[in-house]
Length: 265
Picture 1 (cartoon, rainbow, N blue to C red):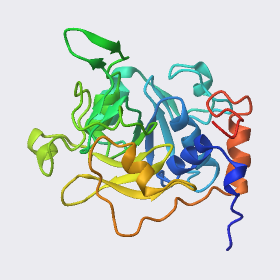
Picture 2: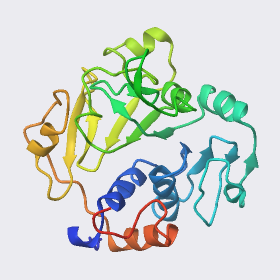
Picture 3: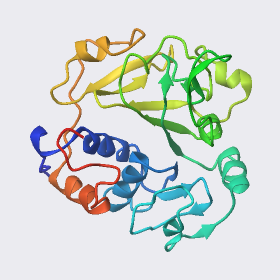
């Protein structure tokens, strides 16, 4: 069946990123998310190709069917028609460390070529220029979920060769490193940015360019990355969102809390 794709001028970059994230969720999977674009992506997946996905929030709501978007992971609206409400220890311990989460979504202030993430500080340990929120549940998610999707903006200062601080482990220093430390999760599988999508070479675990968004060149991606990406000979364009997906996104976030209505979002 032919898909009714939207034209590039009919959607924003944030909408495209949300659709990309939603496609990483498979029907029936357990999905661990927070707020922001991951929340929108998960709600979109449930309304399209993955109605049986079970959304788990860090604060303890399980299989939420919230009608409205939440402003925090502990927003009581997330309890609407949820299958259960447990505690933080249970979600991070029993759910994540028990190996029950299929895919987790995280953000990053810095990420390196192996998918290691910094969300702690920018600058030196002694005199940081910026203090960030820290790990929260990020380390638990990245250490234990079977797959990890990272959603972030693409800038050279964020795509770095060396992290200012290692908060959450990607593939550490390469193949076998996670297994050596006993981490049960599979590591990062995809990085979605405002320029492209990147996966990881299965042999070297090095970040690899997978698709470029409409209107973005491979050279733009390279120029905005602080390390050398694996660049395939042919890099396809990211699949466009459909009109149905865009209509659902705008119904999920009607007030533009996470996805402003501006084309430049």
